[in-house]
Amino acid sequence: MDQELNSGGKVEPPRGIFQARVDDKGRLKLPSVFQQYLNTLGDQKVFITSLDVRTARIYPISVWKQNENFFEDYSEDPQTAEDVAFMANDLGADSEVDSQGRLLVPQGLRRKLGLEGQPVWLDCYKGRINLYSKEIYEERKSRASEAIAEKLRALERKGLK
Image (cartoon, rainbow, N blue to C red; front, side, top):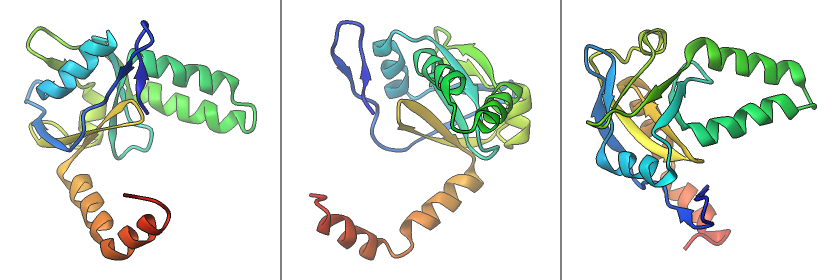
């Protein structure tokens, strides 16, 4: 999902998976492509949380505000929306990218997901930055590579170029 700039232009998210590290003080040094992405959006403030208690998510504050509106307006199953919002707030916190491109990962979140002093992998999806521990990254990579030739053929039959 491309993000809209206030001027009406599109902001393209970074493509690829990038390795970084959460230092012993809980700071994540964002690769430069993610710093540029946030700068282009005009968001130095982010909300860092986990919705599945496995993967951390770094939301530009403009994207997180859309989620807050979604939770408030979701009438199909309000209890589910309230529960997910509660978990997001329990594990999450606002953070700002500093002048060196670092942001602080909330202590409870980094401990729960085992991110302290560890390498992490980042990608961008649906306007958010996903942050994977080594264990989750390897699990996702393994799952994605299973029967990849068949998956590719099926998608090409549906129009993937």
